[in-house]
Image (cartoon, rainbow, N blue to C red; front, side):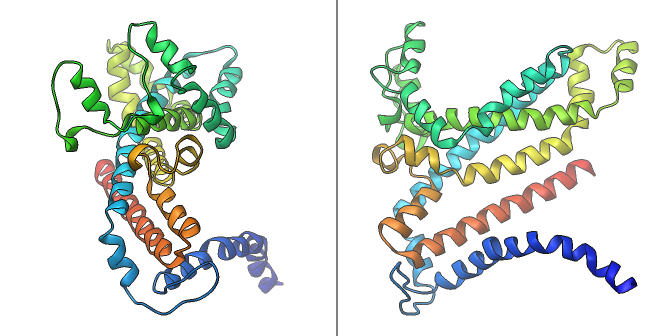
Length: 310
């Protein structure tokens, strides 16, 4: 009887464990093995050792895709954190129809990325898109958006007669359009997570602060921000991981990685090498490098979270 009760919890976990091993662990191990072979979609090739990795690190297209992805993460993650927290604080003040507003904010997250990407591609259309019509209301000339390879910093400062070198030009305008979509898509989920964190803060802290004469801004920076730091860490970590894995919006909104490859993100690069060029070994090596990068960033974020809390 005792043995049965010790085993039974693991039997409940067994279906999930089987799925985890079959669709997570085994593919990771297989990808690691394949990365040392000249592997194609048609079968196994010769063992070539570290050749795929050496080829990868000497490929300018790989470094461009990695840099594009870094730009995406650098812009999307802080914007997602800031806007999500602001909207969560505003939603937390609403007493009536709170559930309706939560649903409205959460809808973009549960909407298919395919549908969302197609809609935003229409919005960013150079001739008939809503984006150009909106900026035209404030006197800004129509933009090429998804077809513009120039950096957004270069475009901005050129309006003041300042020419920036290429390395200071920033992400392309096409990639910036992808960033806008990515922030908008993740906003609802992050807002709901922040809202849950805010509602776990005891009201006693704010009541004591009001008695001491602290205003709303001081309460936000002295009470709200420190007490939602665990939520901030979770949102930061998950948003970073998901942004590094961005693929669908590039595949659907831009043509083969956008103008001059400026929207060619690392996952799209892996896809093209694996399925278009049929270099599965090479694509597996790139996927393993991405895995190590995400794992390293997650570890760094975890260490920083511990230092901050300490």
